[in-house]
Image 1: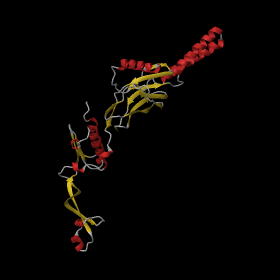
Image 2: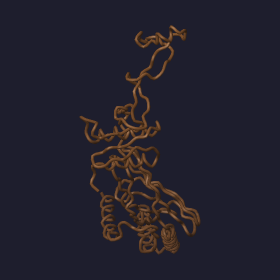
Image 3: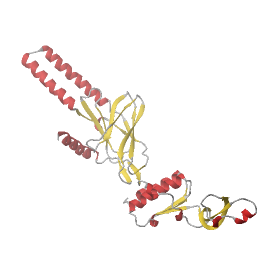
Image 4: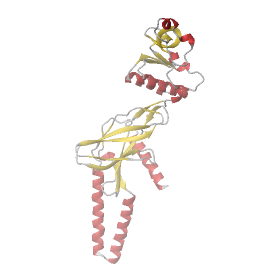
Length: 324
């Protein structure tokens, strides 16, 4: 209960302090006015023990008790200074965030640049989640360290990272020093591919230039060796009469080499089911190196190939029907 109240109080204070700075412009340098520090749970217990020692020393006039009490208090003060120093002057910047599919884990990259002495046991976590799992790491002298903040991508669209808390309790855990940053980081989440979509829908090919052969029964294509199960109608009797052996005729038709993946052609499915199937077909067409285009209600992407074209199609599917 106490932890929950403290958490919400800190969030209210952070909202009030940083309300005019969102989103922040990187890099953000953790200067003195941005760093907060309070005793940790261990620190409060340590302070309670010091009070008991001081009371006992006063009651019994214990010189060694005074010495021990003030020695421990001095050590606590030094620990507070080192805890604060472990964060001050760190430069915080957002890293690259790779798109993911719905159901996967997005990873927000945060880069800490350390211009001075080494920093140890620095943690980063999502500040607006009470039980968020932190990521810990060290930053060596005059170098940088990259932290990956995981977040579950439940649905398609833009996934917001939110405010991040950078904290430390180094060196002995008596004090908790922290700061907040918010760069407005987002991760693009593609629709979850639907494997039940099956093979590419070759019937969505448009007739036109750049035709390629596909299986059918319209035009003669070639001869092949006879296989068990072939019907007598397919046997090339003239070739057999010429002594060329038992051959079978293969027929086919032609279709455009460009495949159009059409949202409106998927009747009887919900919007998310259609987007899942189109996502699967985009990935399949890219793997098969088959030029493909995408037709949605509000836009059309002409047939092409390549990672950039794939990403454009997946982005269009991810943002389809969502408000800007």
